[in-house]
Length: 262
Ligand code: SAH
Image (cartoon, rainbow, N blue to C red; front, side, top):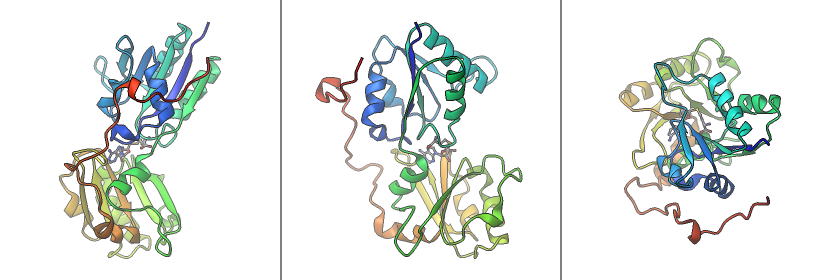
């Protein structure tokens, strides 16, 4: 009999940002297939007997392809196992979660999606930047700048809303140049947040004119925010990376959450 696959959003880095339901799935997993960006503390939440597979690491010489990951998910579920596919942020925000679901559906494997806290919203929040704010920005657009290969229609990006770029840090100079070429003013505020929501969080802010220069040397992963909401940051900058934080309760007995059926 087939097992089941839970596609779980692990949140952007702070392990406490996994959902209650995601944590419950993790705690009953036989197998966990996890990505590079998942908070390492979360793996301690899987049962000690669970098989943990790092699918973000190169198994031999090359990184596991999406097809290999899909095949592994199907294979483990066909062994009757409870499989957790633990992904950074939300599984359906640039996480290829849809492709994995299609592969599972095609193989007749039952699956559930447990949405996660996406870095597109949470990383700016930890930098004191709300993605929308009354009378400042009434929309936000999340864009992958992975390739900057011409697939972004720069002219169509709203100039009055917030723009959030994921996977774009390497392309920051081009992003800033393209936005200005397509109607953003050079003094539009911008920020880059490195390893947001973790103790290694660093934030650099500036304008489209100087952000690329200011952010040079930041590490990955990083999120880029462009728009007037960045101006709120000095007033709302609440997160102190070394400050006292509420942390994830790691003792399952202490947190009897989510009685799941079956
Ligand atoms: N599914 C994920 C996004 C995957 S794309 C989500 O919903 O969050 C990976 C990109 O997310 C990275 O290149 C980076 O732009 C962003 N990202 C993920 N974790 C981050 C973090 N802790 N700090 C800053 N950016 C992060």
